[in-house]
Length: 173
Ligand SMILES: Nc1ncnc2c1ncn2[C@@H]1O[C@H](COP(=O)(O)OP(=O)(O)O)[C@@H](O)[C@H]1O
Ligand SMILES: [Mg+2]
Image (tube, rainbow, N blue to C red; front, side, top):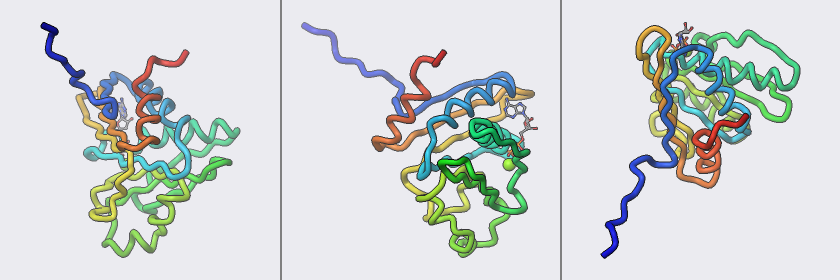
């Protein structure tokens, strides 16, 4: 009689990484950065100071570096949106913490940007029912000093599977 079939307990669309330093966070951000294109959305969840802006900054600066550009990438906590021209793609870095209401989401032009730009969104819970279904979700947890737990969830779409494979596959040299 054959052994009962066992299945891997990890879902290919989930990717968890525990990092010990800011440099490792940068590496993680670079890995995702190079595969993102317009229409990809990353929802950045985590408490204040967990590293959402730090991760987004590393991601944006790596893409700017590719086109020979540099910007300091300030937190969009007051402006709500900072827009970047990455050459081939536009990127919106969004912080919804200070959103006054759902109307702001339309006024900011965010719904269009979901389709036309790469969107990195801090405090995405503010989107409520407007939260896109096809987004990559990242949850960051502060594990003390410079340790952080990163939990990525990729959407169950062809695109989501492709992006998940680039994060979970063997490290590229
Ligand atoms: N491994 C790490 N990854 C990300 N940030 C880290 C890490 N270690 C320390 N930090 C620090 O944590 C802080 C994160 O701040 P920030 O990115 O503004 O948080 P958030 O946007 O989530 O409120 C920064 O001061 C950053 O230097
Ligand atoms: Mg922030």
